[in-house]
Length: 163
Image (cartoon, rainbow, N blue to C red; front, side, top):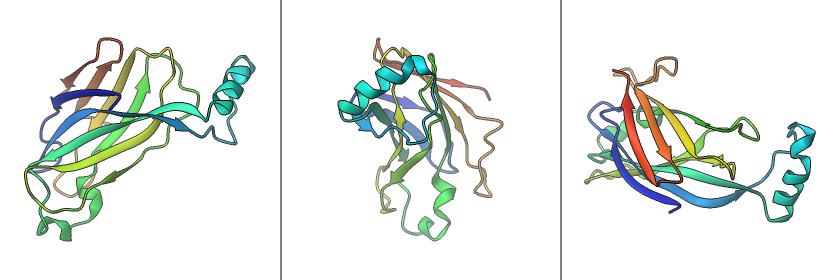
C-alpha cells in the first residue's frame, strides 16, 4: 500500500458502510495516446514514459458488513459508490474510473478497489467526492454525500460529510 488509513465514510450503500482503507500502489500508468497536455509537460511525460509510465494509485475500500450471496442477485452497480477524483494540482489527463470488487460472499467485509488514477509527483491533497447509492441502486453524482480528503505528505485522511 502506498498509504494506509481507516476512514468510515458512512452508509453509502444501503445496509453497508464504505470504509476507505488506503491508497494502493504505486503503479505505473500508460500515458494515453491521445494525451494533449501543454508543451511544457512534454519532456516530463517523455521521461515518465521511459521510466515505465506515469505514477498512479488506486483507492482501496471495504463494504462493511460484506455483501452476501443473497444480495448478489441485484445488479452489481447497486454496490458501486460514485467516485470523482481530483488533486490540488492539475492532473495530466482526465482520470477514467475503473476498479474491481470482490465476490459477494458475505462475512465481515467485501473488498473493493477504484482507479487506477494518475498521481502527480507534486500533489499533496487528493479529494474523492463520494456519491451514495440510493435504494433504487443509482448514484446522484451531482450531490455527493461528502469528500474523502487525503493528505499524501502527512499520511492522513478525513471524511467531510455534506449531509
